[in-house]
Image (cartoon, rainbow, N blue to C red; front, side, top):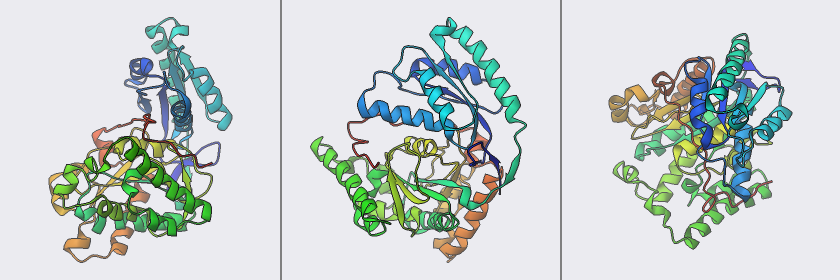
Length: 390
């Protein structure tokens, strides 16, 4: 594989200039700044103001960490100028974390939207011109932070697609890399299994606390998680209970020891298999993993979903041959041979690993070809983010 070595020594598998909104009021300006500039990626932030406590901390952490994703060459932070997530302060923190170029703009200080767009486009064009000169060098699986996710699951997900992803996860971990397992709602009922795989008593306790706190919060709020998990589509696809869904879902993480449990959008301090506290909503889950440093994501879907990500390639895997036939333009890998052809998970996993390596070296995924640039940060702290794992 070949990647872009960044000043902090990490490797990007894409080479983007990030145009990042610190607040929803700046979203349209961000879009206009990046418009028609190849290599510029606009990220719209739905919140960024009126947030307090842990909600504000989480948003700040995610925005800063997005600029640190290895797929980002440089960043232009765009704010309004009076919001909670102050663009100048965010940019200063970004500069302190790596040697990447970071610029910041406040619309109010520039004298309005048009002036901010003009200045922003000049900065982005400068960064893109410099990014084009970035060269690639050899990288290995040990340099990867791999995100895993599942959405639109069915019975084939836990039988074929997720175990195939699990083989890749184990291979990345064995090579010295990092793998994220998330979607905390979809760990419910399997926390005791995951706890047995903890690398230390602290990690075991963190796993049990993570799931237990979520369950307690749901009960206290009078919410039955089974209203959304399994979803109607999950049930039509043959999944009958949340525990059944979770048993299939955790197989994406393979069989490795769990080294750490981290908060949403946080960067891990250890390598290996990591649990990140993400919601079950796919776009927010993937966005949190990318904020945490994932350069690439493998995403299973038995029923089919077109979801992609603005900053990282998303490799779509299905274990359902009918889905691959009907939604082939959205799916990158068909693992249904485990069910229909008697193929082994090991052999399918090796094929998926080869695809991962090609994607990391520049091959486009289906969601990239179709232009799916989904992005959304989680920000509702009433039912999320109650645990700290420092």
